[in-house]
Image (cartoon, rainbow, N blue to C red):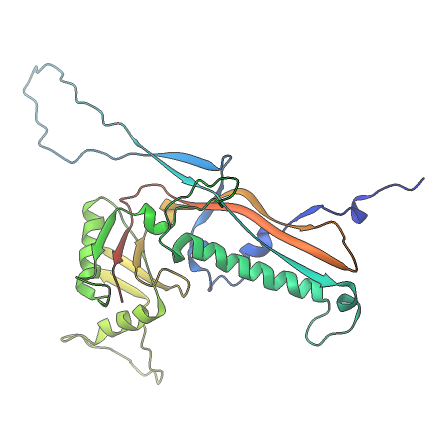
Length: 294
């Protein structure tokens, strides 16, 4: 009697989450920036708390103790989103010699995982999406980063306003006054050009020293409220600029990404890559964003 062994079993799920994590980090800067944590429910919750504002606190000698009402934390939640894609490879394709790659299955898997990682980036920071709990006929969707930030500055009166240094300073001040210390300015490529031109403002000088290289980019901004590192994200929401504290965000994983070989149905193999993830901002007032950008 022959024995069924795992090597020949259809339907085994191969963990490819680490492979996805290592793909094109510059194309998915938000995922690269924040850490991951495991969640155990489709809709997961966390508590957001804050300390009261400072006040005059002086007691007379021998004063009786008086109590202060303690504000209760705010319950926040988000929903996990199933993200996946399947591909099919004919048996002959893997058997023949191809240019630039050893096996078509490996090549197709690599392309699929890259596309999935881009889809995760878009779901997290590339759309303005409220959480959708889903149903048997409607897909669940996570609340994106833009739905989890309460500190906002509007770029202007309409959606054709450009990013300005004044607006960035206003947002940084608002975050500072909230008690937060955001350290990363995440912007779309067109806004990176605008930030680079901050250096050409009147009364500012550039010292090139003996270098023959012309550098027209600003990687670090120092404002009265702290130091900010600029990070370009080609896949983020184009109408927003995000001023974030990476330590306050988490990629939440309900199911890590896996690749499953589906049941064979003819002279081809179908592979299904799927996972279930979300994003969490621990304190909605900690980071900030400029909205209404052109």
